[in-house]
Length: 604
Image (cartoon, rainbow, N blue to C red; front, side, top):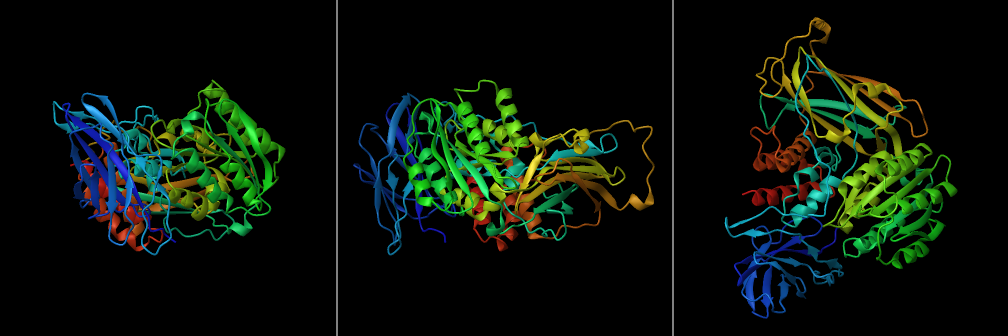
């Protein structure tokens, strides 16, 4: 059941000269992300009054930054609440304002009260020379650089290989930025993770294989002369009662950097959501690390929920970050309680800042890979803002046969640990790789949309020693290729001399766009199995799911300022996404619509 609750996001205070400043804020629905229109906002002690606009925003101009300001929100049918913005001078041209760390409670009359917290919106600055607000900056956050996949000529390079990716972290992080009325850094936008945040209606497996593969194509929405090929994988769904027993070790960062409302307190809440899903046969141990690492709870049955939650609630943050020591200890505990034919997994919850312990990234990677090969997997959960080390967490999860998710509120925790419980924790197919061979007589050139850090050498497809992504129970995976059909003017891939030994066209292949091969291993297997599919040129995309996946990909391209945008814009994203609302039981697609509208306004 969705909660009737509202959260306040406080934005930047900008200083015009030395005397005039602005307090800006946003009021929105926490569950749906919809902005709230017409909320009455009063600023004390000056008693200035305004109402939130069409996008939920409000603004006050202030003359004196030293006053003890307080903001009051009132909305029809809701109790009024007050909270204090924290204002700190930075320099003569900028001020920031952050939300206080106390809880803000806004509830409907007659409904149970829900506790929410204010959220810090980050840093921006006002440039008096241009009268413009600069792009938002979190200088301590780090993201791996992404070089966008380009077009490849099929007559020169007909084969493409990549690993699947079921991570959802990038979309959740982008959502956090946009809800704070900030555009995300381009390298925070991984298009495949945005597309795969959503589930799609692919047919379920009906044979001995744990996954199905489907494909379809349509006119590319942002370039009408091109085609958009969609490939979908559906993992086998398993009821929770039928899942194998779990041996879980919660590895929790309690260092000083986690002493913020949306870090350790949210970690505790998220872990409690997971604990509620556990059974008698499951086991949980808790390892923490700060200046050193230690065990705060030995392996405990999943039925002892109160004991596990009490151990979580006793945790406090402080000290440096001995992340490497914590990981070593967690793996040691996992091996001591290893369950044969079970789910043995470390769940790391942190902002990703490892500054004490294993100093070599290679040493840490080898440790995780060794434990992966012994059957203990690693799931990474990122928390907080301001110093999020996204690149660290993504790398650790990739090498640990796990997944990476970003959690910024209780809604995201529920998605990961309740609605997608099996997919998050239980692997049904590992080292899943896809390889396509395109037909040069049908496809002039192609590019994979996203998956830049998942590309593989073609030789790696048949190499069972080469690690790749893992598919969880019930997970869907979607990949999109933009194709330039034969005979179309190709402005991207350019011209090249024909190869001397190209095979002549064969009539039986003229109706095929490509051949798709998929390799995977069962969770306990060392050798892979291969599936092969023919992609016909007459496979036409007609579903609202396909349109929605294209909308999400285009949205990511816009946020990344892609070099391959032609006619794509935010209005096109909205028109493509709208049909997908017919299949939206959790309201996630409706929330996407609101995020697109926010981004469109920020780009105006």
